[in-house]
Length: 85
Image 1: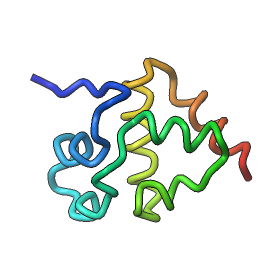
Image 2 (image 1 turned 90 degrees about the vertical axis):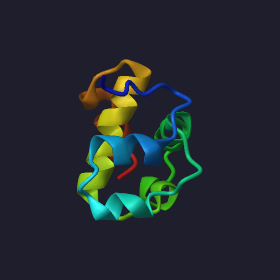
Image 3 (image 1 turned 180 degrees about the vertical axis):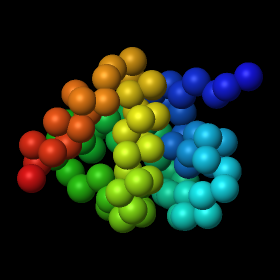
């Protein structure tokens, strides 16, 4: 059975379950939930500071998890994030 993230799901636990062979995923901030990621993006804060990893592949995968948790599409999340820059 596949894990379906929610707004309150721990990002690191989700990531490790979904991508168990990605060792860098172990460096994700263990205290954040998807709602924190949502707040970060929509308040134009630095997502890399929040997740604790500066890898763009991990960011994209976290965004994909956020889309599942918030039941939205990737383009909406990405466009909101890119508007900061």
